[in-house]
Length: 102
Length: 280
Image: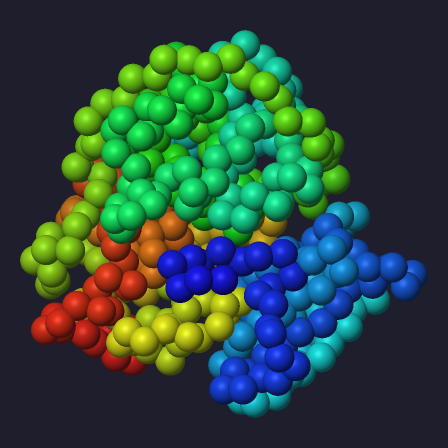
């Protein structure tokens, strides 16, 4: 994704190396009975459920955020009134992996 | 303007699929969303390829807009219903753009693509073919668009509403958290700007909050003076188009402009004042 964009691509921006570098990455996958949930949204929320970012889930049910270091809430929305949350921490240079089972 | 003049809900759109004189348009940056499935009968406009000049950093000009709409089969008399992903950011941007070029019969689907998907409503992969038209655009309406020098002159005089996230506003991040933080320009915000993140105007399903909640948010909580002129900005002007839509179209404030140069321009200017940290 280039600099002149603010859009959230499905699943989040792809990282070319399996390293976080200077980023604090949170990524994960949403599954239903072992199969990816590809229609839905992952939201990154700060203190007090303050909205920070959102991406549509990818074809593989995946999502990725480039967060600031700290504690975050992840929320997943999907058809059928699915609304799930998890608390997660992020650190510079780390990829924190999270999964949701619908 | 008021909410009922500018917003339609998903039931209305579902009832108007294929209706004569109604053109449903999905506006995204990444057209793979449209290709994966879209509201039946909807055509697509690409936020970047179709609406941005490929060379200069600017919009397509009047002639380019006329060619775009003519080619997509949109006529001057059509009611255009816009919707898109990213909580309607790019659809709101396109809405602002249609207004800039004088197309008055334009509506936004409340909640956009997200609400439609979360409701499990029908999506189609059929791409409609529309007969070409001969669209005539008006000259760009300067009353809706703020440029750099006007923004600098507005510091301390008009409402400046920075609609980015608190971390971007404070200078801790240079881009939204779903994107790499890879830019080189300075962080921070325009002095005297109030930080009202666009997301505070939207519910979790992407629909807009009530008029009462929106008035409380901007006027009472953030201290935006509704008696003054206002300029909204973000990073590249599409999140602030969402806020422009709220202030100008839903709440009916008279003089609201979108600064589409936004932080990618302002944060790279030499010699302009920048403020860091939380809002004052």
